[in-house]
Image 1 (cartoon, rainbow, N blue to C red):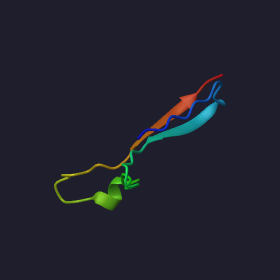
Image 2: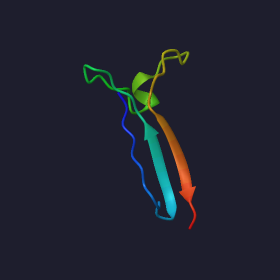
Image 3: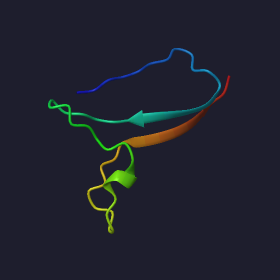
Image 4: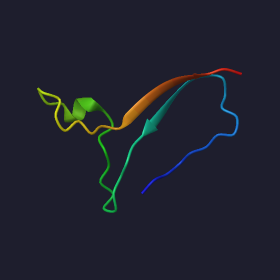
Length: 56
């Protein structure tokens, strides 16, 4: 399943976009890599975070 949020005219300033998936049983990706941390970094499927700056 996928959801898409759209803003016709984003406000100027800092923003964060988060891509997080879920399945038909409502199981969701972890929000932070810290919750799925392991010594070698395997199986890190945390949600992707993107920090952006919007200019007028």
